[in-house]
Image (cartoon, rainbow, N blue to C red; front, side, top):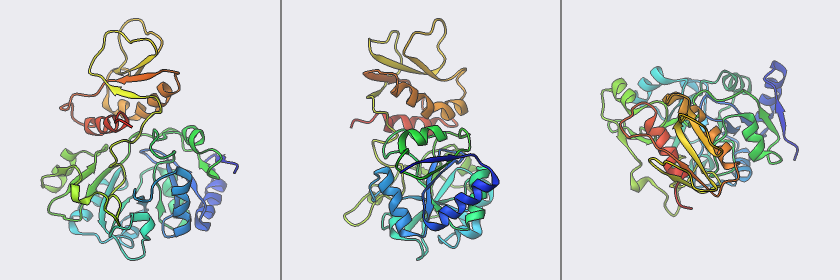
Length: 328
């Protein structure tokens, strides 16, 4: 299969919207990472996502919609969910809610819930308007590998496996959306941290936000995970990665990834997430730097983690690092 990358012209957007309506796969930019999109109500189209990525069907997909009116056709919203939508949509907040019957089981890992969000990227929003269908879209990479934040990353991993990539430039946020379980609206629970933090959600709702998936909501014999991003090992470079608090020198054939640019002379095999330690830059650069280090011909990679009390995007960055460094 030949993979074509498209500039975001009006003609190309109409062409890609029509392709999505027909059941084709299109890699799309979002504010978080690039997603591999398909018509969310087309079972065969969604099955092709799993095939292209090599993704197990026990790992559900996030459905992307234009707004609350479209979302309520797919999920049963409660007052808590509507309040969050008014404040945080469009944006990087995914809500897990009871699904409507029209959502196929392939999208939800055969659960009675669906993960749903409204993306903020203007190109994806234009595609949603033009296509007129909801889009299931996990990250546009081979399953388990580092998420893509540019069209070039998508081509590197899925070139020859998918027909279309929409080039929307580099992703603004750089880590996947916050996923909030609202199936019990009195006890909201963050399943995956992202750029919208527990503190922000608590301030909005006036409720305690719990963190971490309940063990009973993980895979069973007949059902998969309640949401994506919950596997212990994920977002991983092919080169073994280890979280190291500090180091003075790097052993031979080890690449070192700092949180901020180290002072003094920069030695080969040294990488950094931010010039001055800004959390937003660290998140935006995380997957780009992991990919660069993974292609650096190292036997191992070391990376620093943020102190837990650093606030802001700390939980999201450290979550991705823990999963990327998990033992295979």
